[in-house]
Each structure stands twice: as structure tokens, then as C-alpha cells.
Image 1 (cartoon, rainbow, N blue to C red):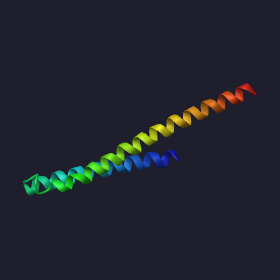
Image 2 (spheres, helix red, strand yellow):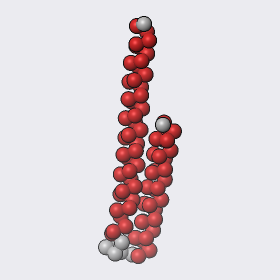
Image 3 (tube, rainbow, N blue to C red):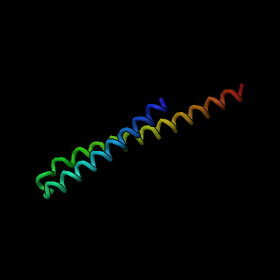
Amino acid sequence: MEKYNRFSEILWLMLSVMASVMVAFIMISEGSFTKSSIYIFAPLLTWAMYFMRRSLRIRFEKQKQILEEQQGKKHKHK
């Protein structure tokens, strides 16, 4: 599960960077922000997904560490 979470985080990071670069290119090539302002939602969505995946991965790692510590204490008391 750890590998999947890390892979998913990296995937969303790459998609976010690519979407941001593509939208910047489109805005520059059209020469107007008002014509291409609708495109800004794609990078915003991908960045939101990246940060959500990152926070979930960090939360899962903390939870796993807590569970391992609790199991370690149980084995020591036996």
C-alpha cells in the first residue's frame, strides 16, 4: 500500500506540473487571460489532488507508525 500511495502522489505531481505548463503555454500563445481563463481549473484540480494524496500518505504513515508502536508495547508486556 505504501508503494501505491507514493506512486499516486508522484503521478499527481507530474500531472500537475504538466497541466500548469500547458495552461501557461496556452495563455501565452492566445495572448489574453480572459479568453483562456477557463483552462486554469485543470491545474488547480490536479494540484488539489496532489496535495490531498500527499496529506493522505503522511496520515497513513503516522497511523502505521502508531500501530507498530502499540504492537511493540504489547509484545514487550507478554
